[in-house]
Length: 349
Image 1 (cartoon, one colour):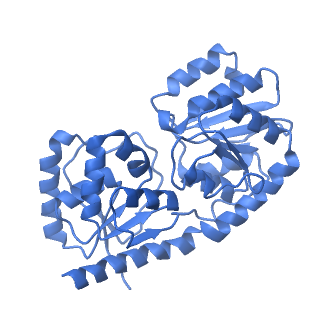
Image 2: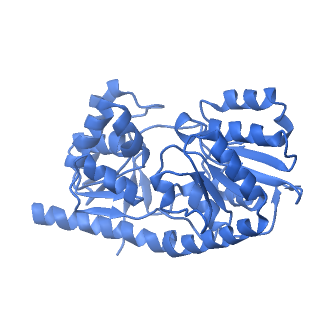
Image 3: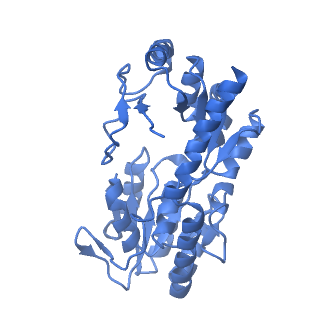
C-alpha cells in the first residue's frame, strides 16, 4: 500500500548533527519557524497546526513527545491522533512538573493509539489515566546490518591498545543521564588502574563541569570528549570499546543501549525498570545501584577483570537484540498502529 508522509518539525535545531536523508515519499511541511519553542507562542503554533491539518487532511497524525508535540496536536484537534512517548515525557516530566502532567493527561485523553518503547512506559501511561487499550508497545529497534559486532578497534584511524579497557558513555550530559556518576566512578578507579580509558560522546549542560572535574583529577589524557557524533560513525565507537556504560536515572528502551548490544558490546547500566527489560545481571551484562558511584565503580572493576564474561555477555546481548529489537521487523508494528487508529476513527466516527 503506497504511503505518503508529511513531516513537521516544531523547532529548528541547528546544533545537532544530521546525516539522515529522508526517503522520497516524505515531504516537509512549511511551519511557524522557531529556533526554540516557547509556551507563550502556544496559540500561534496551535493555529498554524490547524491550518496545516485542514490543508493536508491526513488519515492519521503521529506526534511525540506526549507532553509537547502530542499536547499541541491534541489542542489543535488533529485526529485520529497517535501519541508517541519518548520515555522521559511520562517517566520524568510528568512527575517533575504539574503543568507537564496536565499536558500529558490532556494529550492522552485525545489519543486514539499510544506508542511506547517498553512496558515501563506503558505502565506509567496507565497510572496517568490512559486506557490500557490500545497501547502498542515495541522498541524502535536498530538496523542490524549497520550495528553489528566487529573486531576493528579503530576510530578515525586511531587504534586503542588491546591492553587498555576502554569504557564508553554515549548519553547526553544532562542531570537525568548520570554522566556525573560515571565521571566520579572513573576518577576513583583510574587513579589505581592504568588500564582504564573513557570515551564520552554527546553534549549537554554538564559537559564543561565534567571536563573540568576530569582535568582537576589529572585524567585529561585518559578521557576523550568527542561531542555529538553522526549516526554512521557510531558503530566504530562501539567496536573500539570494551564496555558500554549508562548511568541514566530514568529510561525507556534506550536506543544507544540497543545499538551497543547489537554491536556485541557488553552493557553496564543503572538498575532501573527500563534497563532491566534489556539487561539481566549474570546473563548479558551488569547492573549497578542507580546514582551510586561506588556501586558503579565496583561493577566496572568486575567487568574490567572479566574478559571472558565481557565476550559472553556481548554475544548474549547481540542475540537479544536480534530477537526483540530488529527495526526491520519492529517497524511493521508502527504500520499496525496506524491502521488501528484509522479503524478506530471509522468506528467512533
